[in-house]
Amino acid sequence: MAAPDPVTGSPAGAAAEVEPIPALMPTDHGDASLLALLDRLTDLLERSDLSELEVEAGGTGLVLRKPSAIAAAAPVAGGQIAAAASVPVATPRGGTQAPADAPSRPSVKAPLTGIFYASPAPGSAPYVQVGSEIAVGTVIGLIEAMKLFNEIKSDIPGRVARMVAESGTLVKAKQPLIEVDPL
Image (tube, rainbow, N blue to C red; front, top):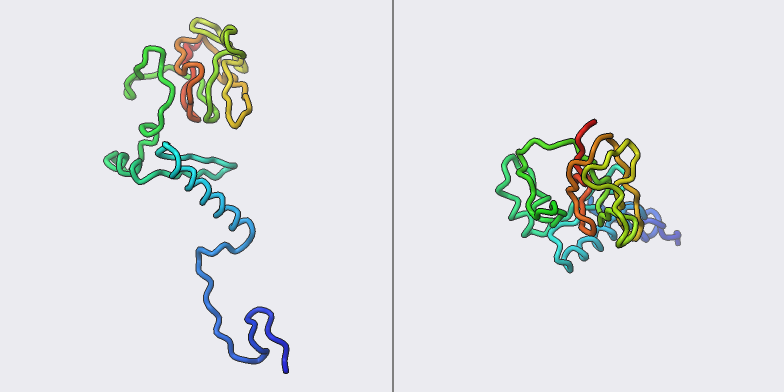
């Protein structure tokens, strides 16, 4: 008697029916762990009060949205989704944001999403304030992300015209932190 085929399990030489592998089945350990991560993120989103969850790693980005967030963004023209409308972000000290169509000054933007802090410690003087002159590389604040504090440095020189983000508030990546008048 011939030994069974290691792939099909049928005796060698016997005709075996091979089931096609579904296209969505993980093909290696990396695919399986990526799908497991996606499942965990989906569960996290469903159990939270968030309407969307955005993750970036390397050159790859992923945005998960609840159906309610997609329905709210559907009327947006051109098929673009207004992600900023569904996530609370920092507002100026006055409590109202400037109109989106108003011309804006150059600004230093958040390089990552997290909690913005204007000073190195509670009760201490802020890194910069309105009227401060800053150079390229001047520390303007900290962003806490995943229990790590990241120094945020200016990428433009000038005089601070407006503090856009309040200390202790959530800021999203690419959101302006301060506006600068060029020197």
